[in-house]
Image (cartoon, rainbow, N blue to C red; front, top):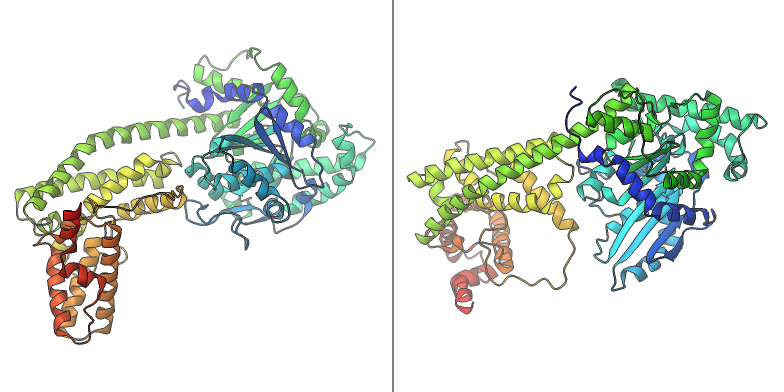
Length: 628
């Protein structure tokens, strides 16, 4: 592996990001707020220097409540605190830690939390809100942050800080967070040996019994009393807990596929700030964070297993001293004695490992960080390459738009002429269509192979470019299909429509679900330059077939299909989401309409008072153009 590769932003700023977070004071203030909250309450809201801090109790006892093997449930419970838009890339609602979801749901139902958030969001000024929590309170804070982010309020800027918090959700939740570009809203502070952030990587049967022995003495631990031999039951429980969790994290890190059915569903998301007596460093890559949760528990110091076992519990309550130490020492120069490489990239990895308290010679830990850096680098290179290709393909799009205007000027549609392909212009247009198809196929292939950032398909740039392409070019794909199709199968049949159009339309629909609703959005006053539903011509082809069927035999199904198509067309006309090109005299649509009109006029079974019939009879599109 080439360790001399240039460093990426993920690692060049790992320690700097940790230093910034520690120095700006929000971590220390957040921990201070956590210490002041009673474990019997629901939440506490305080304002300090213009920032609102909302903190949640630790509820450590929830770790031993058995809700299945790993305590997971679907985030869309019966009360639906979260929207149906919060899904993984597979469209399924994510799995989350049930006890945290239950706690948060109880806060929504039984406290003035909603009223307080409403009060803050109703203010005209922008408001920063920091949700913070320790232990399971951190998991609740995470859910509260997601809940508020889903409101998409311009005046609210939420941020989440957790201390020693367990993992909250599965990979699907991380995908939803990344897709919305919310990963930067979460900072999870993890002390080196604190076992609780790793707890849900082990099944409940591995952790419940030792925790049952520890919890009666939790008051002693919370007061920072040392876990000594005089408390043998606690010491033994700590050893058992550490050993059981360690074994489970080892299986995950080693990617034992035969153990996949037994592995925890939980995965990290957001920024993980790993802390030790040597400093702190941040990791943003989910896979790297998961592995570092394991490797950072391995001591680089000469400590006995009993000392590590005691630290795995005591460090859970020691975040205040740890943050103070990091803040005081944060700008000290860290030097590595006898570095393993002269490479600046590898030196950066070593510095980061040292800050996290991991042995710099730990090959697997080094590899995890290097691999994450390479993934980030690959994302950046692929994105840059696609940006360059997109710019070059703008001229191809412009040429196809000119092709469309050329036929409109001749009183017909580019769809109809490409379907016949009788001119050189049509052949050239088909070549350009193929070039763009290859480009978008490549993009979607890279997205589905996870070779691009997880929020790629939610970026406005790519959504807008993809759907401009789809609305202009899918009619050409439909025309080509019906020109070459010999099996009389509808374009709308399963498996016929190109995958790229399905995916691009899905990206747009998902973005529309989550865009802020603007109450003052004005209706269109002019028809769209491109029909919004790029499948329109395929629906028209089916309508032509249904009309032909009616000429041969009275078919109830065909009649109902035509009525639905009529409603579909009228809705687009009302919304002005259809292009005027369909009304040119020689278009396929006007040909269909004349046949449909003639059939209705001679059939006593049809009523001639539909909105579309009246509109077409008076040539409503021409009257509206005269008004405008």
